[in-house]
Length: 120
Image (cartoon, rainbow, N blue to C red; front, top):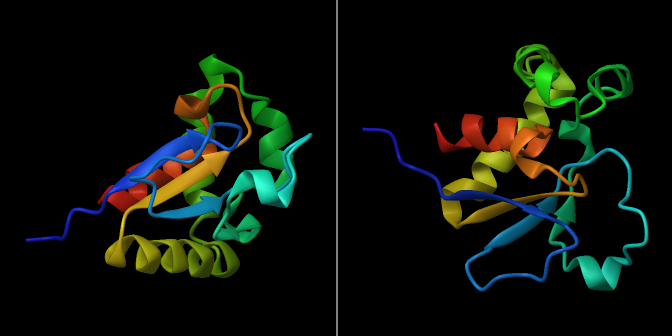
């Protein structure tokens, strides 16, 4: 039976929670107005973020989320993305993992796609 990983998705602007575990920013671009101190990050894994082209095409339009998710999962198979995803999987194997994003709608973000993949 596969190990069920605890993977949370939160906005980077929210205060850290006690159950966050490792806090990893998964956006390609640093969040506007956020200092490294306020972010309380364990790391910034921008290698796992969607390509600039995909991010711009998607533009967080809810009606495009299903197609964005499909295209992003395809991108995650290329070697650089796959290595970054494996790194996140390793982090989640050892303790809770919280994927952070700056988007106003984390439930339709790359962080949510990643969380679904990591939870197995």
